[in-house]
Length: 94
Length: 424
Image 1: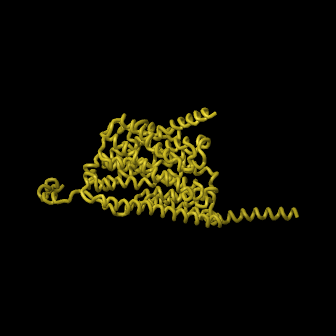
Image 2: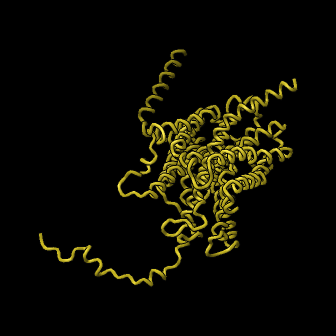
Image 3: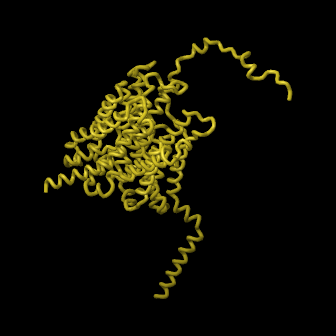
């Protein structure tokens, strides 16, 4: 352990000299926020809700299309199988 | 209706004043190291505000969807009567009562408190006009009118509230700059222009575009059933979020979006027999009232610097009677949906104070913090008590309104029965 030359709490009174007139010269602490500013509220809640709502809506618009494409083979085969069965029964009846 | 009272009581029982299963202070990170008390209450306020917004937004889109096609356009006269003169009268009546009971601080302060409870609550109204009692006693026209009124006036609380708040800022006794002209400039430019008109246009455009897109996708069979049903709710979330981001009136935009979305009645008829919307509705209502039960500042009602509890109770009763009943009764001749005096009493008595009042309560607390305080969140000398007054009075009136609505259903039942026996 080296010797601490300037411990921070001891050093503070030496360097701390606040000219009192600057404190007095501060404007009265009112009007901290500009009232005409557009009140953008980029909070997490707003962002999450907007993104979630937008995504669910847009995804919903093409949901069936996407699902059909993802399960292309399955859907196709099932439709084809049904079609085939129908066709064959039709043929049999004929 | 009754279920909401039960939810409220359950919230009290499970909340910090009871079993302490629901711990709002914990969710607001109050027990974390280095979180000051004001941070904690800020967090709690923003949770409650955003939760209320979420419920209102979804409820209002659903309300707009469930109204018949072009309703606001066709019935504008009746809606306007209730929203224009009706709301103004409600606002002034409540404000005068509050002014008298709070020891007359300044009439502007009372106007701010009155504005918070002026809009009738869509959540409670929707519950009142649904169900067996309503189907037996209230004609469909009148049910629609009540829903349309509560939807419209919900977003229109802004002008009333900000009229008072801007005047407090610029001509209140502690005002340092500006005058009535600044306040009116802000009120017309900001509240009407930016908040109300922008949100109406935005809501209408989004609702219309959503309708066209859904039509387009449906014609091509791109939409599966689940997504179709949930579309109104995701639309609500989208409008709520985007309006929140730009800071305009999200509640009004949601209602208008719901209306234009079913302008041609297509979506409403398609989803009429589906139970998804009522289910979401019920889920949100019960949750929010549970939450309210847990966060209502009950201890403040008893011990505060504004007024003793007996005064609060008297104020609550007087507000319930005088806030709405006389004005609606006076106007009912001009509203074709209200055919008899009995119905006028019904409409007059049911102007519930609920979620929307809590929403405006936090909007005004936010305004006090941002524009009426100095850099260290200390409110200006003359508005020191305003925040507390608004909190106590609005919460208490909301509790009164929720609790009284169950009893008043009983009252109306008695009322209709006595009339029936009288005429038979």
